[in-house]
Length: 213
Image (tube, rainbow, N blue to C red; front, side, top):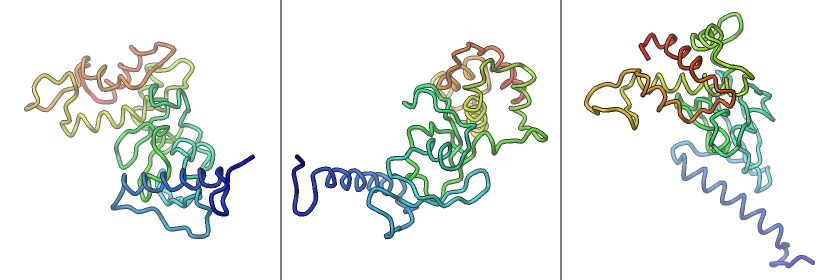
């Protein structure tokens, strides 16, 4: 038998509380980009507008939906893979406003007006991104499950390197870091390949970067 608070059951109170908490989390994360008000939706739902691979998308989502599930289940962009679903393997890596993130750890309602780039937005079969072409050339995959996340992460990583962002193995913080073997391993350590194709992945990234790692 359910307990009742006023005219609401305990279950309804808990659902409403979860929805409120998710909305508050979204507001705290992006105060300059408030989520679109949607008074026609129930408290557990939110309406978010974001740009995905250059196309504006407005979607009604459960406030507990991750960006990963929004991309895969509602926008049918299944190139982004769900691996561990705990932010540990990197298979779900996408670019949000140019920064690489684990999309399984980000709620969709936390990304209003964000620019999201998935593996589908980097290139097409007839016009590959340089990293996609390099992965093919150097056989930087076996089963291929981690490959979209590896490539998206590498795009973000090379941009970080270009902007001079240090890593944990950068020896001199006053000098712009180079793509050494140590830097590459450290910066890509969040992306796991269960097949063990790391040497080929490193060769592909190095060629695309024009570096010497």
